[in-house]
Image (cartoon, rainbow, N blue to C red):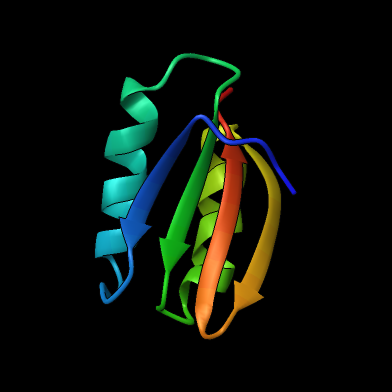
Amino acid sequence: MVNTDETLDCKGLSCPMPIIKLAKTMKKMPSGKVLEMLGTDPGSKEDVPKWCKKTGNEFIEAVEESGVYKFYIRKK
């Protein structure tokens, strides 16, 4: 279990909205804080780690529970 500082609910949204919301939310967060992003778009499984790599944020892990993906990202 990852300790998170904020949760972003992107359930029901499809590409590119989860990444747009993720980028906006991460911009406002202080460095070192951890975001939990919830989503239902299967494309997010690839998109979120790629976005993290591109932006330099740390992709901690992804967990799937009952059709909901939980992504954990640490702000650089």
